[in-house]
Length: 143
Image: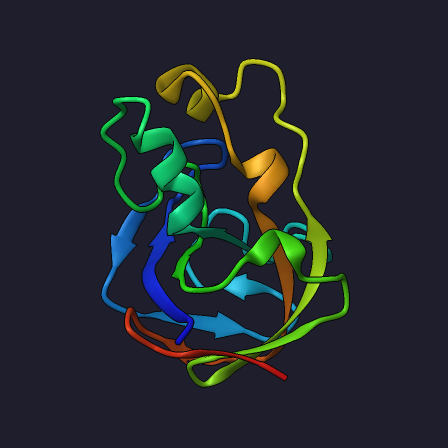
């Protein structure tokens, strides 16, 4: 079963995000209170699989959820293989995959702190089609 391992937010862009117990996702906006909310119509919510973070951990790095500035850390789903347009039911919310990967900007704080970044090749972005609450442990279903 695919599930939400952690929900992560920050009040500034380009920094490691911290886990929260739950988050309100706003339709066509992102996560209420997150620095990226309402800023980009295509990259509203970022997702990264814990299995991708484990690749970095295997190199001796101690990384927690949110280390790559992902909003949702997942488990049990290979995100990078999902085509754009795929719909995901996550907790009360409905998302649509809008972008696979991203370019790290020069001087990226995450890359400086971790030495490398899996987000450009293994992270995905979604737009929020239907808002609601998401909590760690919520199931992720392909629609």
